[in-house]
Amino acid sequence: MYVIDSKYFANIYLRFYRRRGPNSRTRVYAVAMKRLLPLILLFAAPLLHSAEPPQSSGWKAKVAETMPLLGHRNWILIVDSAYPLQTSPGIETIETNARQEEVVASVLDAINHSIHVRADIFMDSELPFVPDQDAPGASAYRARMGDLLRSYKVQSLPHEKIIATIDQAGKTFHVLVLKTNMTVPYTSVFIQLNCKYWSDDAEARLRAKMSPATKQ
Image (cartoon, rainbow, N blue to C red; front, side, top):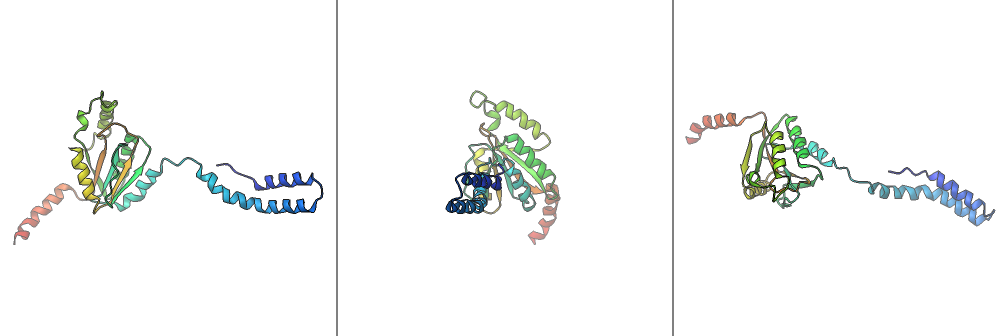
């Protein structure tokens, strides 16, 4: 943002009117302008600031801010450009204007550094069948995403089923949707958060122990 020195402009204004002679009215106007100019520039500063380009890293701050509040059954979605804006009350959508892989890697890093949640990852079952001739870059994206998610178990479901699941979840739980600049279809990554300090196997053993008691 430009830094404006109000005293510099005020002094120029005074020198200009001094050349016009010792007219008292002119001098009064000049003095008034010297005092008002800083106020004018003060009110103009927010307009100059608003003209600056927005920070593209705002979504990272949002993820960091929200992560401690999220838990079991919350979702984080990293989606392509055409993903629909859903209206369930718990769904919050943010435009990142960033690459799909960048956002996925950043979100997974935030999850992995948390003490309370882990990632259960879902992707569209249509993606492996999207051809390059209809969607240029599909094969390259599949290869990059395969490398990025190689240490995760990824489950595949039909796209419409995942959207319906998200819509239903958004009626009760918070869902954070991060839109990217991806323009290949069926590339969204759906992350359901699970409890890091309680495994699925531990939950199954717990239910098995409870089963005889619940039958009484």
